[in-house]
Image (cartoon, rainbow, N blue to C red; front, side, top):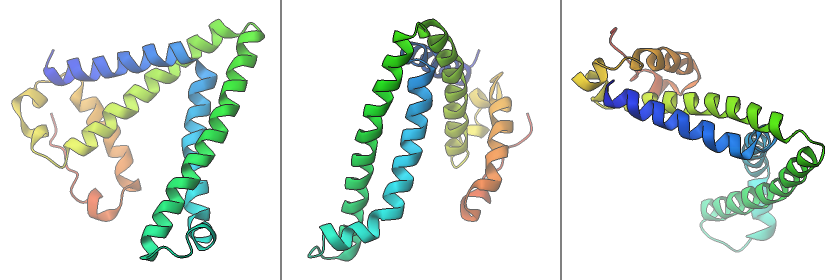
Length: 165
């Protein structure tokens, strides 16, 4: 196994272990929390900056601070909700199933993280190195990365090219 394979396996394994410890409810809620917090902060940053940071100059600083404050507030509020849901699952006796499904969710999360790392590495010379080319799993992750290309900004998508193994 090449270094890439060991690192990819290690990251996926770590994600599985952490997600099994946290459980599916906590993992799914965490994903929803990050997305909802980002959307709330993005939607309300400008109006909130007019109220909370009216005297701040330059305006981009005020909007940035608003984004950070709103993101943190939404994240904390939803984190409390996640704790309540996880506690309810434990109390109802679904702890084992919750953890097993959490492990499956962790595997998907690990695969996604390795795929994102492959996308980032595509902007470097790493995919052309011998260690990368000798990897058993790099080709699979490059194939997964190709699915993300249409969703990237055009300036980035044009720079992603993998040579066939």
